[in-house]
Length: 590
Image (cartoon, rainbow, N blue to C red):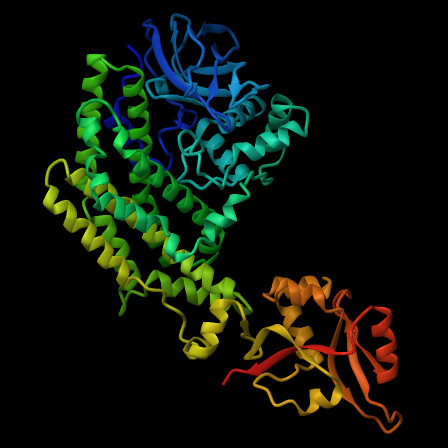
């Protein structure tokens, strides 16, 4: 019999720590009673794909070979192995190592590892790129325990705490860590084993270094439009017929039913997006530095972790069920696990969804989390631009997505006991979310409807220091007379206004075309114009107009030139620029 799982014990362990329990490498070291019974262990070997046709060897923590899997891994990377325990002492660990196999259509040239405390082998053991780095790191740093190893892995790879280092990093939709990107780097640097060892040495040499492997799809996942909001689709799917039997398969002892593949895939996508949002916002939220905010937000995040842990455990249960069809003992274990999941989720009820709601709509003595966040960002940033609004909206989406996961699981669990109430849960969750809107600071710019609509589109931005609204595109004049006489909403900024604004936003020393792109100007405007004009004037010495300008390719502080019109035309011709004047637009906030 393989891998019967003590689900209650695992959920309790999660409640006692911040570790997602589906990853055995992260279970804290603990003393165990010596046993001479062999261990029947189940696990998966997964790189960017499940590793198929690999052997798995098991070593003790002294490097002695204890066992080899009887069969190679299957299409899911699944394996089983029996490990003798006669020579194992209390507190021992086992090291699992894969050998050979195929990663998708290609031969896998590396060995995946996982170091697992003996008491954690009742779980599904995971061998993946992250557990491999953890094992190698522990080899270089004998002074660290499993919890310290987890912390270093998460910091080094920039993996949020809510993503387990087992099923979490193996989620095919995950973008904050990409095994594909790590494998690309390995191919360019001597192969997987050599590259993994170098990364582990880098981890061990300096606790502050980071080396994330982010998928190119991460930005796309973060910037999806509201109409593509995955969490809303999850709620809609669960509310519909397709979501009625998420737990019914567990109650029948078979795990996830085939009819729910769409919902499970959508759930994985939502979890991946939550991870991407958390990775993008974590430093910003921590930097807020307000104890009240950090305590309230941290409490919500911790409570959401229980749901994430249950999802991981459901995946483990489903795996065991699928690999042992017809085994009555496994069937009964799966049924008990399903009953426990339903009980746990029903016990949490709507509490989490309601708590998030109260944190985002409550006024009076308690300031909504959204208002604290948006006000902090307003004071920390020089510009109110499209990026500012996206960050504020993303913070709200993060917590609404957490609500959607909790509500979806609760409604699904209720369908096993009270189907009528399940529908009302979805309705209440949707109502709450419709009430949770972005709360912007009480500043004049946010009351200007016209400006805010343009800022949201990315066609304007506001600089707080000077109270100026800038148009995020250039304007063109035929010449000095046109520049002087044009009556437009936006005026030509003074040279000092522009330079000071760019310096305050951290652009000093950069090429002008790069600097303005960084704050929101279009690529076409930023790169398409070679000479920026800031004024024309006549002097008593020069009858022709004197042109105040500088080159778009100059680096800050962007030294300006005063040239006669003829000299300006000559330089423009040398640069291949038309005879028109190009400049920026600015206006005071009304």
